[in-house]
Amino acid sequence: MRNLILFFSLVTLLWCDEQMDQSFRRKKNWGNIERFSLIPFAKAKSIDSIVVTAFIEIPFYTLQFVKIPSGFLASYETSIALNDKDGNQVGRKTWIDSIKVSDYENTKSTIRNKKHNVSFSVQKKKYVLVGELYDRDTRKKGIRELKLNYNEYKKLPSLMAPVLTLKLPGEWGFESGECPTLGHRIRGIDDGVSVHISGFVGKGNYTLNMQLESNMGKTAFDPITAIADTQSSFQHKFYIAPEHLQSLRVTIFIKLAQKGKIVKKEKVLTMYKPGISNYVSDLNQAMKQMKYILGNQERLEIKGKNKKEMENLFLQFWKKRDPTPETGYNELMEEYFGRVAYTNEYFDASWRPGWETDLGMIYILFGTPDEIQRTNPRSSSSAVYQIWYYYRINKQFVFKDQNGFGDYRLDTPFLGVNN
Image 1: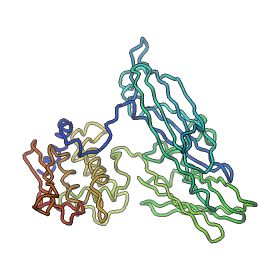
Image 2: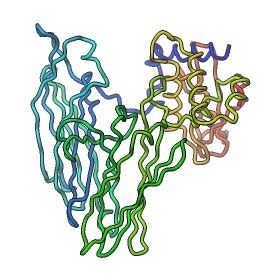
Image 3: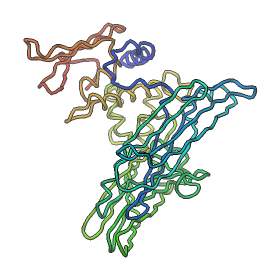
Image 4: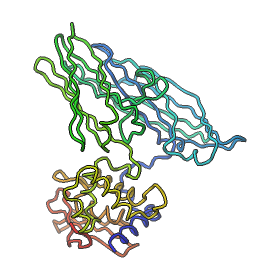
């Protein structure tokens, strides 16, 4: 019965979400033209300079395709510019291009995309990266801006964020045939992943260490030791073989040591696995976050399981809850963990993550409330309340701020799940 209620509330959300309290979500209502990605990668060039390689990634669905005799065509103009903190332009590149596809479904793809990239040589200062996309058919325009701060690399030694690359034909601003990736839900790891590490050091010996950590354990790579004759930049590369990328989540730890000073960086790498939600990057954590819907028998089955057994159980539990088992996509799983991610962003408390709060629990189980009422903190009563109304399922939940710092707890315990 609990799963039926959850399924009903999740599916209902799909058609009634537009009735939600707009102030509740607090996210910018972007149009499609603004949903491109602007992604900078940086590496040390010399003791005084950095190379910033910026990508603009345009998913097909952001553009308007028009029917042509041989399929569908979208035409656009896009640019990447880099400005200093005073607004002076350091550099800019513009592309006028088009995308042609043979069938209509590809015009709506959120995965297929077109990439453009440009590199800028800059000093260790603050900058603003600006990306623009102009649809030549609709004449709509989207703009994205990112603030970049490279002041921290004036210290010696200093370590830049590692850049991960995958094998991909073409020139992408790094070694030929290597394309940088953010490392989120990556596919095609049969050729492994390269880790480009750069930074700045003073004169003398320095050592670079890299270690991986995942559910499979820890893996330490052979350290790199080198000598700098003067203050200089460095660039090194580690290679992660496919056998070290079998976990859903791998954390990369980098350590630079010179003359008793140590600088550390880390990078999380997550792998795509069919049947697992885009929001899930750690199966152990995901299992904990399922506590609101797991039955007692399922909780017992989890105890003492190793990594592989845990993954099998996770897929098994969600297969039972899949509203469309004939497809490769589990709508219920995606919606559930999407709600978990939302609660962690908006209901986070300093002492516990958002999904573990009472507000988070109710949001995960029932979605966005149809109406929210809040008491006036200046009223005669010192207590502050939130009341969430779900008209579609005839429920309401009252939350009381326990201490005046936003620690909202259910005024009456909710008995619908095992906590």
